Length: 312
Image (cartoon, rainbow, N blue to C red):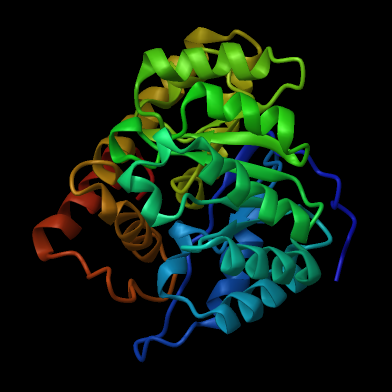
């Protein structure tokens, strides 16, 4: 188990991995190793997100999360930091996942908001603060706040995010899915300019170029499991102010973004898994419930997007 990246602060290009299953719905450990190695071999990425929603974490047991982290650390843990998801409905379980991920070799933690937050946590900011403090008490790994759209009820106000920056020192970044360019720019300006700055990692993969030019500190995206190389190239072009190259790359990415992130958005990672299957990079397209496989028309849409992006 490597502790080489224990002090890693999330920034740059961070693909979120997928989880391959066999037809009997068991985890395909061989395919998982291959998938992780393929992502890790992409020159220019800074980390890989694991055991998050892109890996269907809501359908994984705690034991499966432990086992898959062992596999992923064994395969790529000496080469690249791993950001581990913390998906739990209460602080006790969240702290348990955090301790397990820390002991297993994770380098940072992506904290998802509990489902109950949707019922009004914005009016009870102490719920958010105490949730993160409970996780911070369990581990000293850097924490990344998953900032959802405010309309979901699971988003955090800017005041709450600033309190997290001030009161929970291990909070180092946010994964911003505010899905509003005005709020996104505000988050970048205020949080990255705070006295204790928080990196803003965009997950606005449906409008990635527009997001990056606002000055994000990185990309955290499930579509990186398919096109990590294009994300790296786009990131570098924006960082070097090469707008002409960035637009060319964005034109290639656009068909996939349009396909992956159309409604229903909950199918985004199912579409990505289908794409990797079509490209021969996963052995099948199996998903665990509650997700379901795509119908023939939807599969045809994925193929058309890959062809338009010149990846087939």
